[in-house]
Amino acid sequence: MSISAQEFQRRRRELMEQMEPNSIAILPAAPERTRNRDVEHPYRQDSDFWYLSGFPEPEAVMVLLPGREHGEFVLFCRERDRAMEIWNGYRAGPEGAVANHHADDAFPINDIDDILPGLIEGRNRVYYDIGRDDDFDRQLMSWVNAIRERVRTGAQPPGEFVALSHLLHDMRLFKSKEEQAVMRRAAAISAGAHVRAMQSVRPGMYEYQLEAEYLHEFMRHGARSPAYPSIVGGGANGCILHYVENSDQLKDGELVLVDAGCELDCYASDITRTFPVSGTFSAEQRALYEVVLKAQLAAIDATHPDHHWNYPHEEAVRVLTEGLVALGLLHGDPAELVETEAYRRFYMHRTGHWLGLDVHDVGDYRVGGAWRQLEPGMVLTVEPGLYVAPDDDTVEPRWCGIGIRIEDDVLVTADGCEVLTRDVPKAIDDIEALMREARA
Image 1 (cartoon, rainbow, N blue to C red):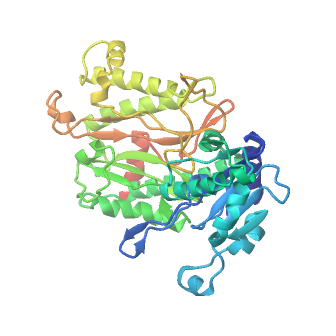
Image 2 (cartoon, rainbow, N blue to C red; image 1 turned 180 degrees about the horizontal axis):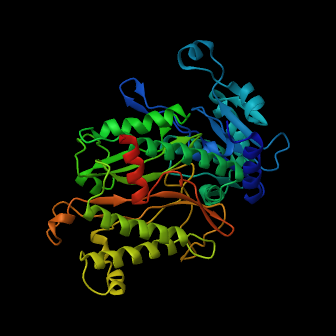
């Protein structure tokens, strides 16, 4: 595990220091999900649960009790079961939860109905995110209602429920040194996969064959899965923002847009590159690509602690709109076109999102109604693009069906930013040189 036990302990301590006195926090593990019939999806722990515990198993509940004399971190989990472990693999059991995951107390999950209500009783406030897991919501309320029914005997039910995410997600927004190290490694693996794809692509390949190059590179470096379904869009498919069919043939003269990143130790990377299937950009492809690249570089330059969250987006929109006017795809004064959002015909998404344990990671974008100030430790994507629909009859046909996006993962630092995914080329000359060398 790349995140140390001390790091998980620090996180729990930081969270409990923010909780009100005489309170309790409750987090259930992610449930297992059926793919079809008796086949389950590969299990992936809930991000909040993982962030505080590093415990990878389903059927578990974490409880934090600040100030509890007998230990503040309690974990309910599956017991060791030799027969089940033969079929499905090792279980930590309560003993392993204490020895390996540093729980102060650990109990069998089957005993939770007998033990957890006693931990809730007498606590004034429950930190829990209602609405994320309907089954667990009902189970929790059954425990609370059972306490309420005993009020006349002196039982003290909690008087208040508070969303745990309000505290926890703000913590997750700021990446520690250990988290940054994992994300750099994930970024390097994904960058290598994009380089491999640029070297491997040939006219006549299918999109799914190019996707396989990414999966191979992820796996061979220890990243067992992509962080999200890979987008491999050749030609006009690159104009579909969330194209995941990846089933068409790649054609000579077209671009291919690939949005793909690995997940490593539950941390996501997220890179997009657009490159020519043949190895050489056409004049129109080159012209649009240069506009997008200029916009991305401006947005990265604007990713700085002196600026708020939306400033890189504003810079990208300004550069994209000026470029569209220069190329004749938009007409009018660029400032007015930005004001009226005329650019949204060709650029309909935002320039980035938070990145971390989730590819669209948690954290508020606005605070008190204002855009959030960028601060060191935040990680975000910077991903402007231009997409000219294949049936757009308002522009010259030579532009139609070209979709371009360039995306990097960026860490905000004390004096600017660090591009974590800098190892994959994005300048046209560098891309063409890499592809030409691979074909030599």
